[in-house]
Image 1 (tube, rainbow, N blue to C red):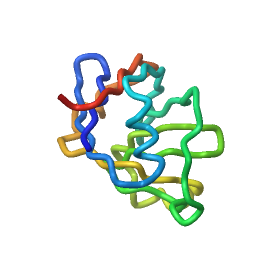
Image 2: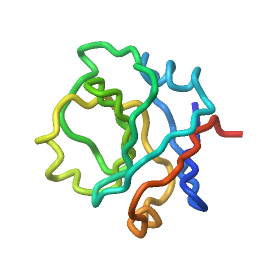
Image 3: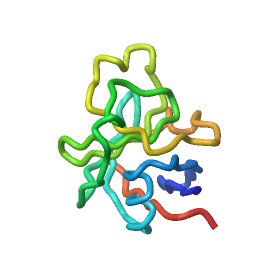
Length: 119
């Protein structure tokens, strides 16, 4: 199932995986979130928790991953530093971007992000 993250003028298509967390996220869309941009990704706190299996929790990410962090209900789209990401535990991958991520490198600060199902 496909979703889109709309960060200002930037639209990032993401293909969700079949996990319980991904299905639950899709069922709650559309959703608006405030996300802060860092050097590695865009991250914001969901106003709800997503169900997940303990076997789905892992350290790190691959560039392009959309991850959920159950501790704090954080959702993040990562676009850089996968080589050093293993030091960040408690990640549940719910999907992966299917388009280029270059435009995200130019962002900074906090943005209102709309997450919705792809049309």
